Length: 381
Image (spheres, helix red, strand yellow):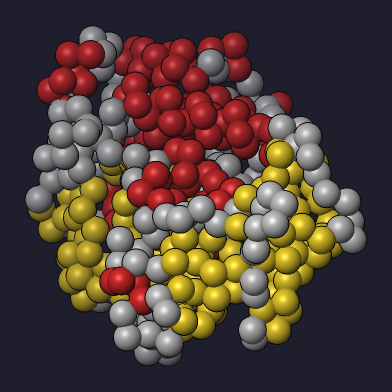
């Protein structure tokens, strides 16, 4: 049991309106999915433990296997090797209806001829739940989601955000052991997406239901998840808290994927324990530099500082500056040993260089990330 998440019993005590909550740890144990005609697994020997009550986000680029991993848990894709367990029981061969899960899809999947209330209560109706009990559970979910005044409307009379809330309400009334969400916000506009993701995170915290959420948007992942699992080409790269993923990425892929704008990643020669980037020398810790003639050096945009008079550093020609109020992002070009390279740097919004200017950049010690130039694995601490 992960002590960072409240136990099921504790959550029941916190919310008297909830009935007994099923404990629901989820485990992927060497789980693989291999599609016919493709020898490369879409999900390859995935090992991932998700605690009861945890909000786990699966994130990665297109083709990384995140949606396939979710569908394997839902029973919509086969598990060709390994197991998937819910509450310690292998559900790999169980049909979806026997897994005690509820899924929220990208396209809402609402019945257009039914009202909001009928859509939300339909699964309960199929289970033979009485109309009075259905109505009570639908009303309770509608209150949670601020949908009470829409219960008699049809989906066509709702906005995209309201439809998504109805889809979530349909999942909530079932009181499942696990919520599964497959890119549920991708059809919403940017402003509504930000608002809805905050609502989902708050709702999950209140309900305490184990939730696995898939997105390709790393900003969404970082702002919502208790932990985030980063996948690439069907392989789990790293699973950790958002803060640890940002501060201590396990490899160069995670370093470049997590963070917006992305980390600057450049190959740099190592000379006398220092990585060289143009006029910039970055001291490396002994564990990072040991036995290597070069490293992949990672520096986040905010780690750069504009040099004071006389300091040596990286000369960056400003190509464009994006002013964002308190901050600005400078995109520029620097001459490195390997040729011209592009960099992005965050600067004070009150002191923004102009296009065509050249600024000198330094990096305070300890703000660098070093990765093996061939394997991409993190070097040292």
